[in-house]
Image (cartoon, helix red, strand yellow):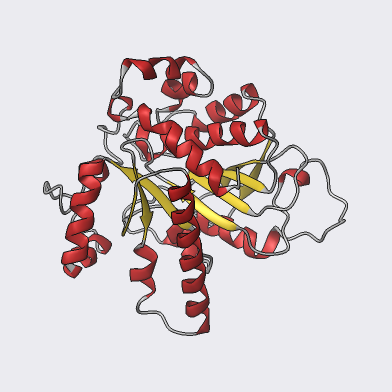
Length: 318
């Protein structure tokens, strides 16, 4: 694995010592359930239908539940034939470590959700994503009134008077430059109506908040379009969710410069025409290997994990 020898001890600590077993296509649900139990994290499993198959989502929260002000999300499934180390095991473990940190400082007002059914096959609609049904759950099924009597399991579900801030972490295991995605801006350009204006304002607010927390935690970051993640399922359901990812500095700066200078580059990115290019300025190497057998543990950069955990915790006010 990339990184200095000083990072070697990371792989002997919880949750990371379970990473190698998790970073494979088999038994991710069982491995994740066992890991959360071993870490003594309070969680429940919420099963939602509405996609290509029922999806089982892990809800992690402060033990006493409470109102959810911030929700951090990462998908735990991976594409067939890929180890899925960066897509998306690394982000799952980063958020597990974030949960441990938040509980240690007794921070409340947050939920972390590890989602299923993100990886779509060619031609499948965003409505098939587990995140689409999850977003509808938040819109229609997760609201509770204060003081309502709840079961022990329900205490681990979100409670809120206002819609929380949603941040989705995807491909966060390679590189130290945070990428705050602007893809929603391009997708919403052709939409019209009051609802579109409202969701554009929501995205702008999430982006400003993420930028402020990146500056607060001294994280290098860039704004640019990103061609993946659960935020598409949320957007299709009418909710704003800010995608956070990471790239090596050289890859990030090269693509950011190209996307700013060439509007056709972004159109090609949206349409998937850049997926097979070998030009790193047009499509970063880190993105090119997602969903392939090359997405291995050896390509990760553990020296940057701690910084992303601090940023994720800061999003939750810690």
